[in-house]
Image (tube, rainbow, N blue to C red):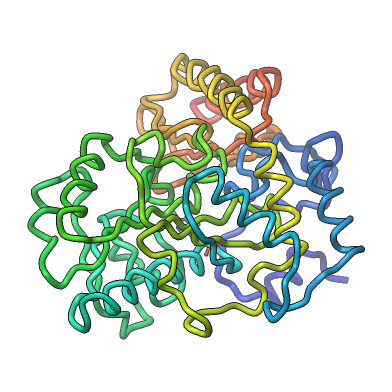
Length: 391
Ligand SMILES: *Cc1c(COP(=O)(O)O)cnc(C)c1O
C-alpha cells in the first residue's frame, strides 16, 4: 500500500512544495507525526492563533457544531453577529462582511472601494495603488493587486486598475495619486514579501495625502491582524485609521474565515445583493473566531508584547543572525554568512521546531500564548540547527 506522501503526490494538485513531514495530531501542545513531535513556530502560516487544537477553541467550535452548523446568509444567526459586534466595538469600524479567506476579504475591500468611488464620482476613478513587494492573495483580482512580478505570469489577462509604487517613498505615492485613483492598499508589515514593517512616518504622510483627495485607505491585516503583531490590528501601532481593514488567517484559529471591516465612510456602500458568499459568516467558523478575539484583551495584548520582546532579545543575541525584522510575534530573520535558509529550516524541523520562510528570510509566527520556556527551547534548537549546517 502506498503511504500518505505517495498518495498525496498521486492525487493532490501539485501546487505546494511540501516539507518531507507528515503531521497527524496535537499532544501536549506539540504537533506530532511519524513518531516525532514539534514545537510549532509556523502556526499553519499564522492561523492557529493559540496553537493548533487549543482547548478553548476546540470547545467553542465543537459546541457550535452540535448546536447549529450552517444556515446560509438568508437567516440571522448569533455567532456571526457576536463576532461582528466584537470586531466593531474593538476597532471603531462600523460594519463587517464575512468571507472565507484573506483573498476574499481583499476582494471585498477592493470591490467596496471601487463602488464607493463609483457611487460618489461615477466612472473613471477605479485605480488602486498598492506597494511593490506586497502580497494580497491568489485570486485573479488579488494577484493583480499584488506588487510582485513573479505573481503576474501564466494567468493573464489580469485585472486592470492597479498601480504598484515603491514602499516608504512618499514622493512616488504623491505622484501616483492621480484623479483616477480611489484607494491606497498596503500591509503595515509586508509578510510574504519578507516580514518588513513600513515606516510609521510614511504611513502618516500617506494617510494625509489620501484624505486630501478622498482616496480610501485599505489596510491588509490578513497576516498582521488578530494579535499577531502585539495589537489587535497592526495599524493602531502606526497611528493611522484605515477606511477598510481586511483580515483572515489568525482570526478563525484554524477554520477558514475572512473579514472585511468597513469604516464610517463606506459602511453603507455594500447594498443588498451587491456582494455575497455562501459560506461567509458560517456559525462554526464565527464561534471559533469569537473564542480567539475575546481572549485578545488589552492586557493580554500587552502580555504578547512582553513575551515577543523576550524572543526578539534572544534572537538578537544569536551569533548566526544578521538581523531581526517584523513586529511582535511576526518575525523575519536574516542569517549570517550566506547561511542557507532552506537548510536551516530543515535542520530546525529535524530537531523538533517548525519554522517558515519569507523570501530569503526565516519567518517565525509562534502561537500568541507562547511562553518563555518554549521560547528558550526554540532558541536552543535554532542554535543546534545553525551549528549542524555550519559544520
Ligand atoms: C495570506 C495573505 C493573503 C491571502 O490569504 P488567503 O487566506 O491565502 O487567501 C492576503 N494578504 C496577506 C497580507 C496575506 O498574508
